[in-house]
Amino acid sequence: MAHLLISLGSNLGDRAATLDGALAAVARTAGFQVLRRSSWYATTPVGGPLEQEEFLNGAALIETALAPEACLAAILGIEQEFGRRRDMPWGPRTLDLDLLLYDAAVVRTADLILPHPRLGFRKFVLRGACEIAAEMRHPVLGRSLGELLRHLQSTPKYVALVGHAPGFRTQLAGECAEAGRARLVEPTGDDVAANAAALAAAPLTVASAVQFLDARRAAVASSIAAAPDEWIVDDAWCADEVCELANAFDADARREFAAALESRRSDRSAPIEPRLLAVLRSGDEPAAGAALAVRERCPLDVALPPVVELDIRGREAALLEFAAALEAAG
Image (cartoon, rainbow, N blue to C red; front, top):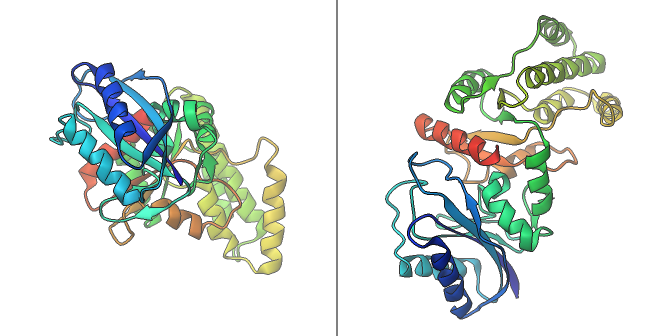
């Protein structure tokens, strides 16, 4: 038997009655046994039309013998039973049911993605999920649901971009900041000079690599301090840059570099963890596989921040996805 975690939401009609009825329908479904359900929480709509009614959202933990695809078919049937229509992305809906987790399964098909690709950064989903299943782990990000919610509540409003060419990321970071009403990381003169000096060192040394990372951290820290209540957008992620720098060293220098970084983990020069990681993809990677690709490329023994995936083949849609992710994680 597997443990299936689902979310429930409604913002049309008698929302509480709809969610109660939907949960009863889930309980009647062959192969489903509802173990626990959360409270219903009133939440502000994220994305979509501006003048929507508030949602009621919650979650349910189910024991099932059904395969993930059969679970999806069952909840889609319940949505149809309650008059679900899919007229627009993030639009008003009578009933919204989503599969969030199926034990530790990672599924990537045309019809089903597990874990749910937006689970890691949606506070309105995590709140109910953590009430009943805080110990369940996100198999890609490497954090429990409780840890993910605490991460969103405790980290600064800082989002870093990963993937594609650095020059393109810099350009897109400006567009993302505008779309999300955010600020770009703004290095001070000292930060710029330190970066230039570190990158000009030839060949690259451990000392110059550490100097570069210290300057990058200082730029992020000063930008956050200047606007602590606003989102800050960065065109690079420190952990990704660490991997690129480490690959330039031989084995001995790589060990020296790792030791220098480890000494910084417990002091104020430790890298600032992003609340959200925006991973760019251009269609070559499988849908919702961006977080897996980052983990494979980055051999650090760290949990990933929540990931929002931006398909840059459709720039307007990517910017809308980015803005909605900031709203959900804010």
